[in-house]
Structures are given as structure tokens and as C-alpha cells.
Length: 548
Ligand SMILES: [Zn+2]
Image (tube, rainbow, N blue to C red; front, side):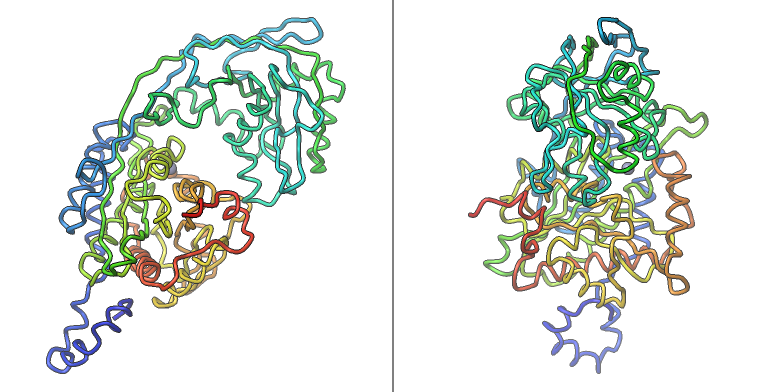
């Protein structure tokens, strides 16, 4: 007997009376099955699925497999048209690598920049032929955050101009809120709202340390994907924006050659975490490029376990795990398949086993939705589509519990729930973990703002309290044994063909992680009050659901 507290309380009379007659009764209760999870992992990370890239046959087969499992467990189809599938159409945009041309005119002197050595420009989702030209205004970080009393656009007129902004955000910004304000999506919004028609993002020495310019070059050939709205236009894009480019420090030097504040002075200010003020640069840019469009489709897979309470069954606990991965590697010679065993066959396998275990238990009060989402690797797109086009009312979703890349390599004794500190889900997760003898540990990497970086964030943006569950770093022997293994995974396997299913997966970790996931679902689905954002929480307030 490990976690079926509720089962016990509901059926204790039956069980207690039968224990005497049949002591094996307790063992027959449903628990996560290690072999079942390993079987899912073996299938989903198999070479035959070719890295499960969004829109490919490999990912379609993975989705079919997930739907078939849902059916076996007796989950109801909750996709579209009575099926488990919710088809998402995407615009797949590829830039013609020979097409980009960029000329900077600084103080009357024109100079062509080298693509991709000095700058990068990606496929444009709205303009297959980019023809952008205009004067350039420097706008600091390009962030507008009234909550933090910060406005990089104060006193600047950027209407009809191209804005040049520094990559990243001030270090003194709180990490998770900062990640929201400094996201590409928000920065683009601030620029567009002020009438800018193009964006230059400038790399800095600080940005180089976090993500070197060279690293961007490895993604040069990656397509840009956006889900298509019913009217056929790409979501989360701004047609008013005619084009953009990412500048290396070398290109930035050219841009700031005659600037009233020198680039050296700006970098020095960043060093001291001061925010450089914006100003018009005595410069203009001409940029052209060509992109080719195709439409591809890829499914989210949705299964429903109906709740037992006549009222509460209309509320939904939503479990998510992304089923897609990055497909075939472009640069590695021998084995080129990015199998994505840990990322995220493991999360998907645990999601499936969670669904199976629930199907073996008396139904909880609230309903549970199991959603395998597509296109996470393309920018959290499948979850964003589902959260904006849900097959149950978004206001009836009480919580999202997301599984992404659980590293199941060490026998952990604690769990991390990224984002739990923003709502009373922290209490729920902590209770659930306790029932298994596990501890809830705080986020070990607050500076990375992981809360904003996986599929649960798509639900946060629709006002749904969410957590991203991960194994903790502690083992019985050491408080941070997992940290080293985690770092090694990142360095040698993450998004590489080496992320394969190996014998080094830890059985205890597999079982515990699935059990604690079930336990959390059990708590949320049965607790009296639905989860709530903390009073005054930034994310709760920013993305509040409209009152029903
Ligand atoms: Zn990934």
C-alpha cells in the first residue's frame, strides 16, 4: 500500500474485511508498472520513429500509439469529431539561404553585412518576400514593464522606424517575471504597439555567455512554425512587422560606429547592470529575404477520464506531455536520429502509465484530461493551440500538470514542481509527495525561469494554475547527486542522437515518478476547492481568466 489513500478511505471497510480472508488484496491495487513505462519508452524512442519531428510520419505513428493506449485504458476520445486527435495546421516557413541581403547606412556610409557570419534573419511568417528599409532607433532592452516601473521606450518615437534592442533583460529583474517581459513575444508586442516596422536584436557580451552567436548558426536550417488560425493566418505573429535580424557583436560594432553613446559605454553599463537609455541612431537599414511556405498538420492526442462527482466532473485536471522531438540531426555523421528518449518519450510514457493507473482506480471526483501535445520543440505550439482552442471550456480547467524531460537516472527522494510557488498547488504537490515519503524541494535553478519554458506555460497564459513536475536532485546518500547526472545529460545527450533508451534508466525513479504523478492528480481531482493562484501573484494577475 503506497499511495491509494483515497481508495483506502472509500473502500477500507471492504478491504479490511477481505484482508483477513485474502491478505494479498493489498498488493493487487493498481500501481505504476515499470515494465509498462519501459515498453512505452522503447517504442516511442525507437529509431523507426525517426525522432518524432512535428509533421513527420514518425510523430504520426507515436500519436497513433498514444491514442491506441488511451483506448485500451477506456479513456473517452476528447479530441475532435469523436476521435482522440486534435489536428493542428501549421505554416512551415523556410528561408532561402541564398536570399538574405542587408545593408547598413551609418552616417551616410553604406556597408553590406555578411549572412550568416555577421547577422541572422529567420523565415518570415507573414511576408514571403521581405523588403524592409528605414531609420534605426536604439531602444535599450526594448522592454515595457509598468509593474517593474520600467519603460525602454519612454520619450522615443519609433513610429515607422526600425528598433534596435539589446538581447536579454536587466539582471535586477525578478527571474520569472523578467522572463515574461523579455520574451521575444512580449518584446515584439511592445515594438509593434509603438508602430515599429522592423526589429534588430543585438547580441551583447552578457548574451554571448548565455547563448553564443555561434550556437544560433546550428539552427540556421530549422523551419519556422506557427499554428494557423481558422482564417488561415499564422497565430502570434504581427504582419505590421516587415522584417527583423539578429546582430552579432561584429555587426553591432558597425551599427553603433557613430552613435552618441558608444557600444563600449553601453556594454560597460550592462556590466554594472545599468539600463542604457535609447536614442535615434544616425543609421538606416535595408533588408531583403525570401521564404517558402507549406502547410503541415500534426495532432494533439486527448483522452478523458470522466469524474464521478455529478458537479465536479465538469472540472478538469489536465495532464500534458509533449510527444514530439527534434527529428533528424543535421550535423552528426553516424547515428543522426534524435531519439528523444528522455525528451520527452519519458514524460509521455509516464503520462500513459498515469492514465492506465487511474483507469484501474475508482474514478476521482473531477475529470482528468490526458493530452499528448505536439510541436513543443517548435516553441510550445501544440499546447498553445490546445489552450487557445480547448476541447473543454478553458475556464473549467482547474490545473495543468506538465511532464517534460523527467531525467529518470537516479533514485531521487524529492520532487521539484516548477511554478508551484505561484499557486496553492504547492500545498497539493507537497501533500502528494509526502504520501510517498518524498519531499517537495524548491526550484534549484530560479535564475533559469524554467516555469516559463515548457508546455504548462501555455495554460498559465490562459489563467490556469500549473506546475511542471520533475524529479528532485537528492538521493538517500547525497543532497545533490542528481545535479551532476543532470549536467552530464545536458552536455552529452540533450537534443542529440545520444538521448536514447539505455539500461541506465533507474527503475525506482521510473516507478516513483509515475506514482507521485498519479498521487498529485488524485489530490487535485478530489480536493474540495479547486487550485487558486496566490493572492497578488504576478502570473495569476497578468493572465487572469475572465469571471464566468
Ligand atoms: Zn527538447
